[in-house]
Image (tube, rainbow, N blue to C red):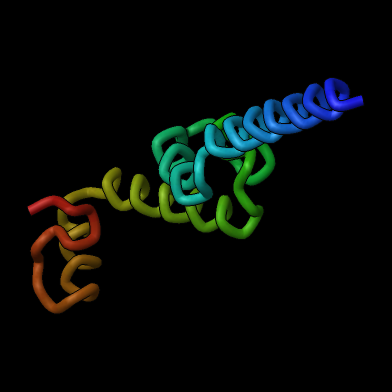
Length: 101
């Protein structure tokens, strides 16, 4: 009887350790957001997510996708039109919309 209790206790400890290890190996939500930002590309749509974005809430994914689309649309604009938007952003032409000087 005592041996059976020891075996059951040891098995429970091992199972708990494995469960904890698996849980700790999972990326945090913030890490998933960063990975999703890196994975966004021109083929990403509202319904066709890159694999790195699968764990995100729909609202968070939509926000990241819209920000990525807007940033790339601004970068693709002619410089004169970018400068106009940049001026209206903060009152000076300083690349604040695209993180460029």
